[in-house]
Image (cartoon, rainbow, N blue to C red; front, side, top):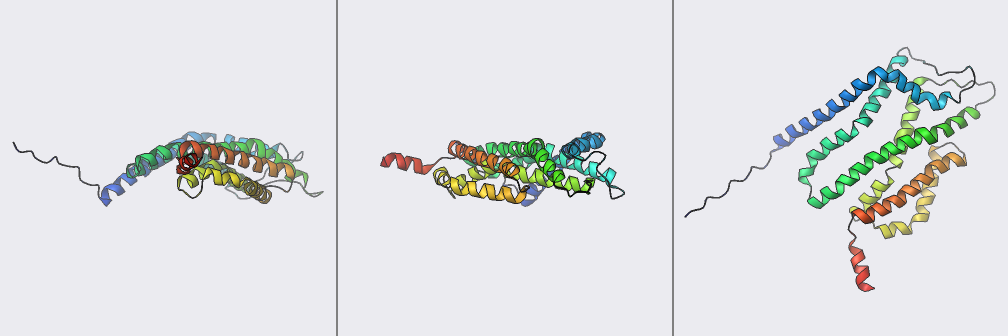
Length: 254
């Protein structure tokens, strides 16, 4: 009795990969467009909410201004577009994950899933922290130090660019646990070695906070302390998510 070899599926070609990538990117773009269409009618309201931390600290009778002719339309629309990108980010990342996941080993997939989820949640947390905690302190400081006789009246485009920069800065700063897990997973360092560097990391956190926040102790601490707490969270996550081969060696020697 003869047995015929079982036919195997052909390996995907470069064209197949490109077609799948195009499909994934189209789905991600559709998700962003759908969210933008939902947010667009509320663009002015969203900008008013974004400007509230500054508006409450403006002098009596002062208000924000629009220097460019198209700014009253473009600034709220730009905000709606950025918010659409942020809100659709889980879908975008899922499409990218679905494209690269087949090429990863099983243990890499198990590690990548929680790391991606943690990165998205921490970025949102960083943006929320900037809006609810940092903005009131920063804008109160800026309006308080204005020279006598100078009325603070900020252009809406300049304000939007400033707060978006802070959103990105705090969103990236809150990625400290993700960076810690990745460094440990790549074998660059270990949780124990990072733990010994707490003093240097604390000095670095306060130095960076001094450079990107107003020159007062309160706002510097508002950035440095969360970064240090997130660093400790990253150490815990690295111990839970990444196997540490040196642990078994330490136990054997003890």
